[in-house]
Length: 243
Image 1 (cartoon, helix red, strand yellow):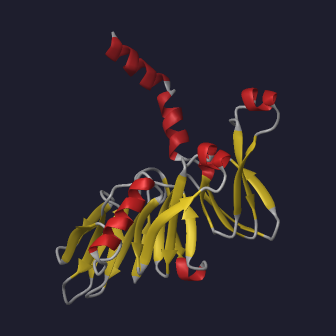
Image 2 (tube, one colour; image 1 turned 120 degrees about the vertical axis):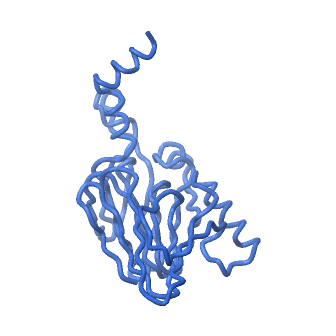
């Protein structure tokens, strides 16, 4: 599978599919495709799955807050054809080779963009209720496993950290893109009550303990949207609409 990640602050993935090759994409993520590529909405992550397995896969996606369907794209021509998927907000597209990462990663919901190869999108349930409630990802996160390459969205700049056994870092939960299942993940309070209320860093932090890789983003979409909503220009438009 040949691909390029192009662009700087608004990136997209450009695939060259050989005859018979296919990719999966999040609905609405396609940027362009050659005419020889056929597209089909599917419940599961593979067109050869049985109906009930497809339905179960769709149900798992709904639990993570995603669309029930994925879109499959297959080159039905005899010659190579191109297709591209674009990120939905400014930042980076992060390629993750699951075969080299132990076959599985856990990521924030809404981060999946597209995938090439044999992959499955499942549910990662938080083990602790505090982590589930305040982890910045609701009660569940996405579990991506298989031996293909998945492409995930990250806002701003990406930082990859390879944690040693028992090495610990704390991060804003919204800045967490994903991590390997070997990494311990829990939510802890952000200092004392004074710091939590006046420190500006929120009430909770993500506590991440190695071993394993962690990917962080410098500008989560929720933070970007919050800053945009506070701009004077947007506030003036809201006040003008109310007048």
